[in-house]
Length: 350
Image 1: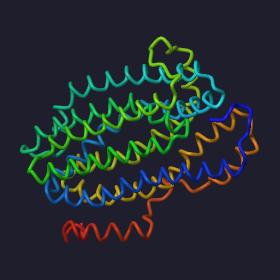
Image 2: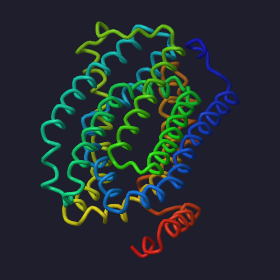
Image 3: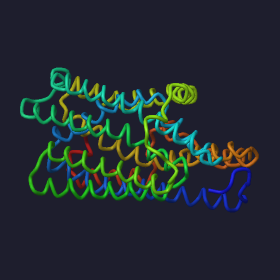
Image 4: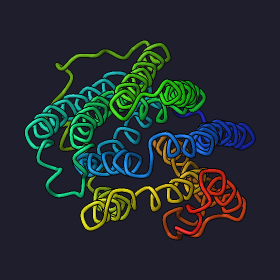
């Protein structure tokens, strides 16, 4: 990063924005490609009910995302801001405060999961053959979510310092490893629990890569709870609360349908609902990536006082929200139809 107070040229700033966007789209492409290839095979090998339980488990655990309280967006904002001004002390305070808060919340969430995960089968229509698998899967995904809630903050830090190349390389590596690993396990005849263990392992590997890459890129970073403080927590919360209600509504919008379907209908129906919805989310994510890049750029420009460039960048990046419509782009719709026909003829009718 350049010295504070010195504005980079518009050409260089534009090149950096496009370069970041291409790296983000590479990560989206990796997820879409593996999803199109793996999901039909996953459904064919596991069956509709087991696949429905797989998606239901993620939907249940994702409800905990509202406890983020906007701290991830606050970390992107303030790490970008203080990094632009070369304020290493404040960067350490923001990151370590976020880690302490996330660690406490994650510990509580995993404790609740251990206590109540065995009772979820009474709320959802889970057949006796899958009760044990469902219980273990909830615990595994809860563990993965809790680890990600803490260490995933280093992914936000990489976004804040605009190292989208490193972030998406780590994401692509873990995505491919997870997809190949799941395919191998299914081929060997393993079920939900084995796949859940693999997901936890690959997710933790990705979070470890985020941490190592950030630590290598920012040598001044120090991991210590002594940097955390209530004052910094309040400061971050004052910013994060602006995005809290938006994030909360998005969680309910995306996770409520699977939970309601799982409660009122057999879990096999979740497979018919979630598979096409995943393709919609992949394509919408490509647009959302523009906003991710803009957030980090805007925070950096604001820190340096380059308000004119910030207004230009905000105008250039303006685009409809990916969540304002559920219409699938034509290309994705064609891919979805072909993939459904590949999975099983009756899936298209469902």
